[in-house]
Amino acid sequence: MSARALLPSLAALLLAALLVAVTLLLLGVSPTRAATGLLDGAFGSPLAITDTLVKATPLIFCGLAVALAFEGALWNIGADGQLIAGAVAAGGIGPRLASWPHPLAVSALLLVGALGGGAWGWIAGWLRARRNVSEVISTIMLNYSAAQILAWAVHGPLIEASRAFPESSAIAASARLQLYFAPSRLNLGMALAAVLSGLAYLYLYRSAWGFALRAIGRSPRAATFHGLATTRVIITTLVLSGALAGLGGAVQVTAITHRLYEAFSPGWGYEAIAVALVARLNPLAIVPSAIFFGALDNGAQAMQRAAGVSAVLVQVIEALVIIILLAFDSAAGRRLGRGLLSPATPDSAEVDA
Image: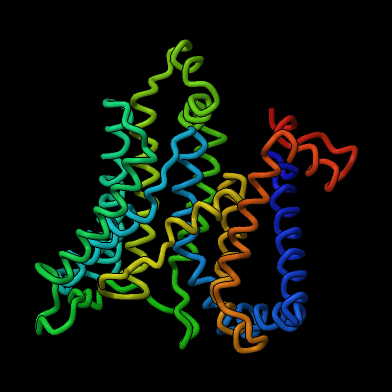
């Protein structure tokens, strides 16, 4: 994928910012003050920067999961459920690893989380490949199933020893990722997410499996005609997609929360769809895209304090970006976007083709 393919995302961000600024002016609010508050909350201090990176970390894992599936025209809406499945698996074994050496305990927790998310993705992959069940429907349903299993677990078999609170017991100290730059919560999870983005890029664009996935996404009939094992690729892709999201859930458990509770995910898997779309499904671009959305989440409260604007405004910005991107991807939108970006610039989709 060429860098030019990311130009519509930049144009969408600029147009969304312009629309929000005009709306704020009409409401009598200073857009400059709101933007300054947002930036200060997200990047105004070393602690704010590290917290933005922490908030971006699960978005990277889930964004990679979404991008990997979407490249094969597999509409995985279930990254949230897969993240929860990975977290439940990690939180379930975490308290039992007290006697394990630290590197082995952390590795086991992350592996189990990836397996949990991968198993959740396998269900959707098997249903799509073997029973032709739409993965949109199955992954959405699996999201609710994972949330209900988590609620049952923290009220039942995994509830903490006193049984006073609906949360699991804390994982063993040996299974916790070390934090850096205290009192920040920065940990190696961000580095792991960045490494996986590079590996995902190589998988998609430098491997035979990635080529097969993209070929199936472009034309399943042509891929089948040329002998590609579409059933195996579909199942494998959704397993890998689920494993990435599940790994993100395990990182949250081992580095941040150290236990499970009912509202474990605030919707990272759904927000990751926006992250992946803004990145144009490019795994390398998912990192800055996730940091952008992490900055919006982290700076929302500071913006509200500075300008008196509801923190919900960041969700409006995210929605506008996606709507504008979808408009750009329509036939009329491509012509408009081409004109906005450069009258002489060919359509990004045509360049990629």
